[in-house]
Image (cartoon, rainbow, N blue to C red; front, side, top):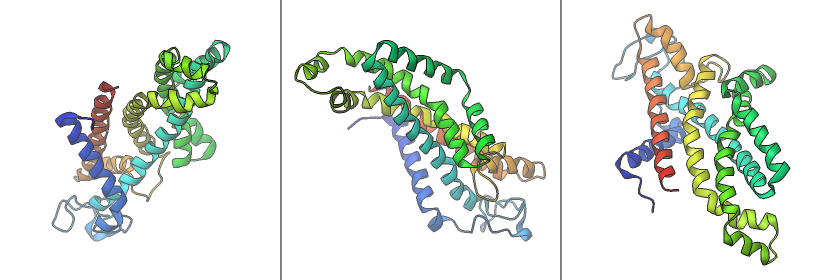
Length: 265
């Protein structure tokens, strides 16, 4: 079993707790996250509302629990899609070499040069505001982050004796790549994907903050930071602080976990 160290273990526990809250939000949340109660609008922390209420009187704690769903599911989808696409391109480039490698490498360089937020804005402009456009754009943007690292590792593995031995035994290229090459690359793929997840969380929250991702009244941490800033100017900063702290904690935990996994490649 891989030892992550104290900080790594704490990060893993935090992420597991957030994942549990995400799945069990309907059971754990004390209130309906979308139910307005104008009598409690902008109320501070109380026994009934530990983190207060927003400008519409909605319970901030409940919205924080439900907001974990949209805040985290989008980035997870982005990383899953980009990891599959990036790994496929990387192994194809490393195995084929020559012109195929050159074409794929140039494509990855072009994608890498464009900021992820630009891809998100372009796809949102085409598909309209919402998670589908954000996930599509950022999945394309994150593909080269995975592919470039995996390609370098795949090139090293491609020239090792076990690959030549499998080739001499008459194994097909597909069989060698899937049964031999891919399993040896898995630790690198996992570490790179986990590291990229933290950046995906920030990007998705940023797009929602701009009003182009998750749309109101759906609970989302990025939206809560945006609406919480308006509430803070009226003397109630708990919404923005709570959502911002959760984003920071999740990103920090993911980065620590990715770093620990990367050290054990």
